Structures are given as C-alpha cells and as structure tokens.
Length: 332
Image (cartoon, rainbow, N blue to C red):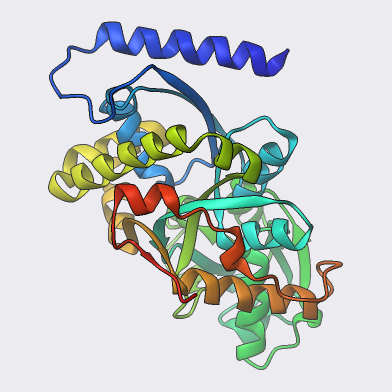
C-alpha cells in the first residue's frame, strides 16, 4: 500500500513539475515519464541531486523523483533493504557493510569524493590530540564510516581503540552532545563541525579524521531493481551529469540551492565546497577502499562474514558507461 501511495505521489509530482516548468531546455531522454524514490542524508554530498531537482533536470529527462531524507547513509541503506526506496545514497563503508551482511545491492555510480569527517574534542576535558582519547567518552554514529575513521585514526596514533569509551549517538546530535559536556570528543561531519566552530575560541580541538582517504558517496539499489529498471537508472544518471556540469559552470547558484535545501548559510556551504569532488565515476579506488574497510570490519568482528567480497561483481556499469563513457575504470 505504501509503495502504491508513493508511486501515485511521484507521478503526480512529476506532472506538476512538467506543467509548472516551461520547456526551455530540450529533453535529453525522450519517452514516457518514469518514477523512482531516492533516499539520502542531508549533507552537501547530495548536492548533485538537489541541483538536478531544483533545475528540473529530472523532469527534463522524463523522471518523476521523490526524495526522502534520513539521519545517515546507514538509515538510507536500511530503507533500501526494506524496499522503501529504489535508490539510496550512502558512503562506500556503509555499502560494503551491507554486502558483507549478504545483501544483493548494486552501485550505479560514485557521485562525490570528499574530506568532511573530523575529530572534535573539548580541550577543557583534556582532549588536545588523538592520544588524549584514552578513557574519554567519544561519540560516533555506530555503523557509519565514522566508526572506521576513529578506529584507524587511533591505531595510526598508537592508541588502542579498545581504550576509548565509544558511545553511539545519531550524526545530527554530535555537536549538542559535545557542547553540553556529555561527550569529551566526537566524530562529526561538516554540518555539525560548522555549529561547533561557534564555540568560544580555543575551547575545541578540531582534527581531520580521514587522513589521506577520501570518503566516497555512492548511489546504490537492490540488484533486481537496478537490472530490471535500466532506463530509470540511465535517466537518473543523465540528470546528475547535467547537474554536475551546472555545478562546475555556475557554482554560486548551486551553492545557494544546497544551502536552502540544508537550511544552512551560504558562507558555510561555500567554505565546505572545496572539500568535495563532484563527478560521476566507478573506479578502482572504490574497489580498493571497500576491500580495505571490509578487512577492517572482519578483523574487528563487526560482521559475520569471514572473506572480502569481490566487489566488482556488485557494480552496475551499463548505465554510467552509456551516460559518461570513460567514467568506468575498473581492473577486471
């Protein structure tokens, strides 16, 4: 019943867009209107989707798209597994974890590569560096890539990850938890860190948590849906490709769209923008990163799996091959 209601709303929404928008741009993908539901979490990483939606690039390509927001990429992944979504946006870490759990889901593209995860500690609680995390209450959203970054950051700094008191908190509550003193440190994304920068000068330690590893945000769908709906996937990627061209050529209007969508300030979005590489791809770095993270999850008993999957078998390359020839670079 819920799926039927969403489908009706999606078709109605597409019809409304088609009526309200003048046909100023030629259709890039002629054919009957198609509908899909996409889940994502409200961060800058969703910029291509927000820009495509705001500029009518989905309707231009014959798509009616309903977007649903979740508290994290993990939340979108859970909704995808339930069948609530056709496509979901998540980090490569979350995706790898779902594959290790036995889910048959396929990535259709990476849409963003970013440096946007930070370790933030209260200096008055004795946190001035990674070594000070021993025995400290450190908030992280368990099951997200923050888990991995915290563990790797500790290990590389000679700190036993088991000596850190890790507390699971939702991503949207990290800033509040640190400011009210219930946490000594947190792993936080750009949006929460922007709030934390309003703290009194010198009161916080803010360190990059990712090292030299880019966070890869991917769009994925259940394999049976992706393979059964190649035209929807292709049109979706066409719209994102157009959006990314728009973002490169006219970053100012794109940043205004994202700020409005996120309820953020334009200066905050402009400041974070250089930390993101918005481009459609499926490349070997995605495979290598997921293999590394899978080994970490297996080693730390975060999965029942005992072997690293062949992630090449979980990529759907036909759509991107058609939309952006040359954007697929996987060693076979």
